[in-house]
Image 1 (cartoon, rainbow over the protein chains, first blue to last red):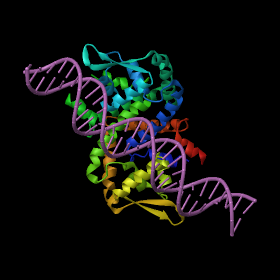
Image 2 (spheres, rainbow over the protein chains, first blue to last red; image 1 turned 30 degrees about the horizontal axis):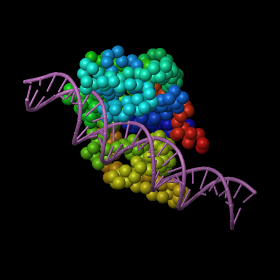
Image 3 (cartoon, rainbow over the protein chains, first blue to last red; image 1 turned 180 degrees about the horizontal axis):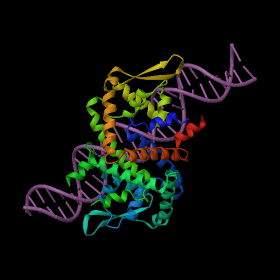
Length: 161
Length: 161
DNA sequence: AATAATAGTTAACATTGTAAACTGTTAACT
DNA sequence: AGTTAACAGTTTACAATGTTAACTATTATT
């Protein structure tokens, strides 16, 4: 019964395709799970803003979350429209916009954190603590391996710095 | 130096976000690597067609590769335009279209297989055989865990069958 | 004071996902 | 046989996202 599916995990298929399949389902389910909260996308952006210890500019977020700045503008426009964040000009450097969660967002952040954690738990179900840790460390390794390959505009932008 | 990046691998971030970051870079690099071959996208579709033992219909491919049928049509249109595949009506069931690689595609398939394998190797660099196997088996587990969650149109379509 | 660099915005375009309406073909059922 | 339902694929329209380039405003450099 699984023979079809197993083909997807054949090593001659692009690794990216396997990840892509997981991704689509993951976000579909997460979106469904969260839709009653008033946002259905960009939870990771909210989490990043919530977690940010330093000043949270759009540049900071796009570097951290691997969005180009144009997409970042659109995502933040969306979150502003949903009344989840505010954009204020930084008086210290009037080029920068400081991003902050609204009260409305702060109220739902626990639910978002909880939903994400639950979602991750569901995804990782059946893997013991050891396997999970190894899995995450594999992802980190792969992330770093891939970061410096050519054909990647984000890298090019980062290198120019 | 890695403190920013490590945040991406924090457990309170959506797992999907981590995978998404990897994905973008992976396909960017793969596309770059392959562009001299005359196709720059949809390698996994070509591989799936190449590997298909059974009759290769569009339905078969969209089920296997997790594309909805509309996207599948567009992808195959692209591959036809690139002269990589042919679409012929199945005489046994005239509703179905059988997808086959052209000679042109068959000539570059070894390069594609090789490129993907090389790309996967680069991505997995530094992970020993054991870790790699565990990683793939984790992906398979996650895939299956996520498959049955709500909020997923592909599932709904499959369930209706 | 002139120039370069940075942060963010806008516009135009391409790709992809989704939904709905559609054609043509086969299967099922009375 | 004739109606109906199901299936394979196409087309259209729309929304989300990525990419590039040109742009404004502000700050840093010289």
